Length: 384
Image 1: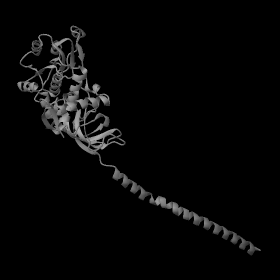
Image 2 (image 1 turned 90 degrees about the vertical axis):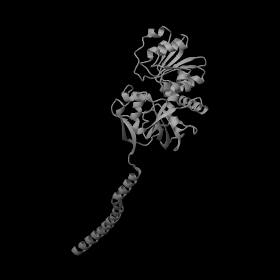
Image 3 (image 1 turned 45 degrees about the vertical axis):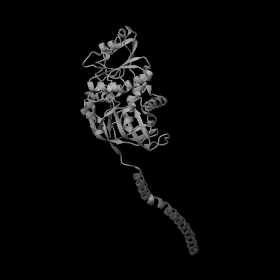
Image 4 (image 1 turned 30 degrees about the vertical axis):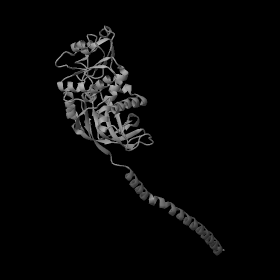
């Protein structure tokens, strides 16, 4: 009986052993299959990291002018800066030419405040599109485009720009010419066509008539049929102003421009004064206006004018405007129309662009010094 119990127990246990052997075997098989994934995780991670490393490019470094503190031309530093990839709605351009404008000086000095420090100055450039942001249409790699105004940052070999802020440059217009005229030309356009609409028979006074904007104002106002009076600082600049359409040129260092304007107009005054000089000419400019005349102050190269008491305007019912290009090209349609008219006037010969000075971009400090000391005339461009 004991042997029978023992045998039965053995068979039962043997059955259990067989059952558990099968379970363990199956489990081991499953564990073996599952254990393959953990063993391959390092390999997968390595593969993924290798793929990611292949996609992650080192930061794009370009040369640019940077301003770390306000001051003279010496604060313009030639440095390496990191440039990211264009995001949605953006393009990256490789600049071919950068325009120099007095507004760059204002930002460098702190007269106008940049959004952050340090910053890269410059508000006018022409370049080739070398990358476009995701999903962007209407612009492609290889396009030659120009921009003027915001965002600031043109003093660089390459830059990221909103695609809706650039305009296509016609093949007939050289990039250097386009870079020299975008901001100045569009400024001239809104000044003579919209801020005050110059017409045949008007008499206009243009200060700094041999400067970048002044030269274009004289040509454009002349083409519209106005009598143009220009002020300049030297005889050489007087000769240029004559070529650019000035009917009367006043060398303000040699004669009183207010008295001379009165003489030219037989005491009547002018319909409009375009004044980019500011403090040194402002009061005299007001005196040159006829009743209901327009004082258009669009710059302040000599400093900010003193505040104007309202009675000073009321004596002759004068209009005073302090316009900015940004408000006249705030929409895409306005931008395209303004730039289009500038390019059309270049093509027709109405506007002759004088690029009298070219500097390497790295020598922007010298260009600023020459501009401020009135050693330049016409347009100045910086070449990356």
